[in-house]
Image: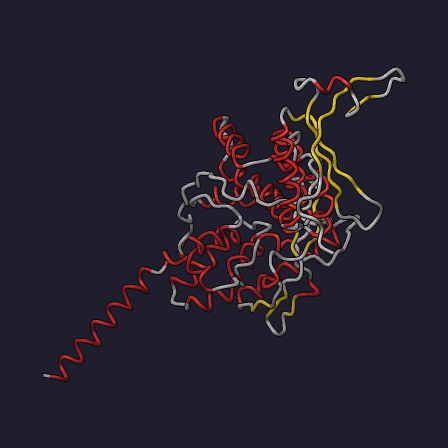
Length: 402
């Protein structure tokens, strides 16, 4: 049987108490005075157990109480679960507990930081149903006025939007108050990258100076692997005979302190990578260096890592960054991030005629469009060759027609 869409009742009550100390509620004789007491609504909600009645009071007029009751019934017909006592803080805590087991450690850490430091202090006391776009807009304006970084602020609001989207999918809310939040976009910077000559000069300098991580840089530039993928690479996943390796793990730093192994960035990132003769030579040198370290170390913890610390433990990303910056300064080259060696790999391939589709496959991008979006500006010579070839073809056709 369908629930009656017009059920529920609206009545006036007060907080006066009788001789027994109990509230008189709707039985107070003073309610004959129209100005005494406030208006309340009560409605039975669907439940599998015993009857559950929602009562909300404190309305100044009967019209306000009736409107609130109507809203409850409309939400019920739309499949939206009503719990107007739950605050944003309570919901976000509940959402985080359900979400954390399905997310990577770095993502969980970032969620926790945004919830504890930003979202709950700003919106926590608001009832979940009452959170609206204006609340979010005011928060964004306040953060921008305080000088908050655009990227960090966008990620914070994205976290809130993700939580509210889950509430919508669970029929907990009718709308997502953060969905259309307006946050200025940071101007996109062109990729700072080395040329083929600069990349070659950097690697020559590292080998000449006997930089301990020279072969790590060689592998990154030669394959386009990500920093975490190189630091998480195990010898069991390297096949020097067939000249390929398998990306199975990535090393991540959680809270910029402890390290742990995790699955690669995307499902497509977990794949075989071909190795050039230079990359194979680099890995052979690293194996010889590693064996020498094992003999020299008092306590070497062999975790089968290709690029560990001198004691065998995983190398912290910050340690790699420090070495990289010193090597760049000594070589006298433009400053880069470690991740930019991936861009260097793409630049070397594209500027030397490797097709975009092959570069995309080598970098393990999901779509060629991603590669084009990132590196399309690196192919002006290819574009020039294209129009020159087209013009030459037309000239030949004109000559034949004559």
